View (cartoon, rainbow, N blue to C red):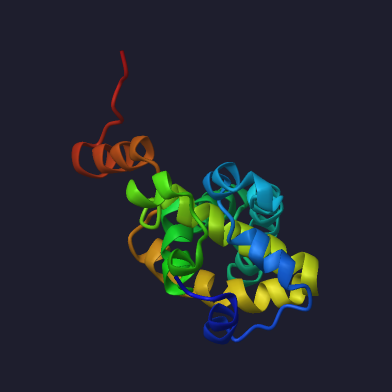
Length: 180
């Protein structure tokens, strides 16, 4: 398991309140199996981090695409902060190595579970926001979001399957599908 000091070194961040980082890396399964320690889990930080990430991604997109309509910006933001993308960010940040998991969760692949990794990244962003503010959270998130944005745009990941079908149908068949 990656120690919190090593995680901070990897991230290039030093928390003023190390308890926030510890909490961000504490899965509820660990808390349930170690109640005597009295540690809180990362769920509340995850909630906050989700909102902070939405804001940071929204601001990035607002400036990156000054002429884009609100609907497309909303779809791009949703594609940027989706579970799989945030889980990949967590692995890049080595959060999978630092997560404190209960034995059962560990044995059942908890370190590679997409939802756990996404939650940990959101919790990290929430913890960093509380510890050092929006600027620090942005310094962590924006480079990751920016690199993912190229992929999102290139692969049109902001389009849902129905929209893609309708565009294909119109382009190749000169009609839109009817649904029953």
